Image 1: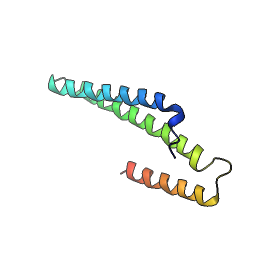
Image 2: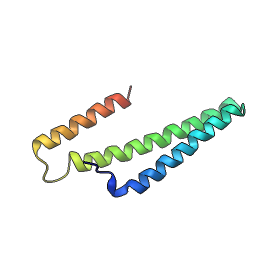
Image 3: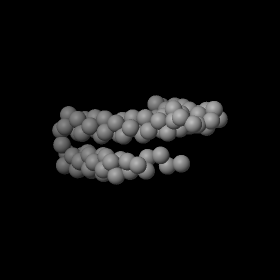
Length: 91
């Protein structure tokens, strides 16, 4: 089930902004920008990706773990999926 479809345009806009930020990092590297400037850009990318991840995690929790009417098996599956992603993301 694609539970992000209700806000796909918002998520797509965030991804496009992240792509723009990554392109700015690439341009800065090519232009031999100061290291501090590049580090600030990379930190901004990381923050944007973390924000996107947070939003999708909350949406997943709402739809696949906490949603009323889910069976115990569905809740367990949703929680297991989320645990797998969080473990992979935190490496």
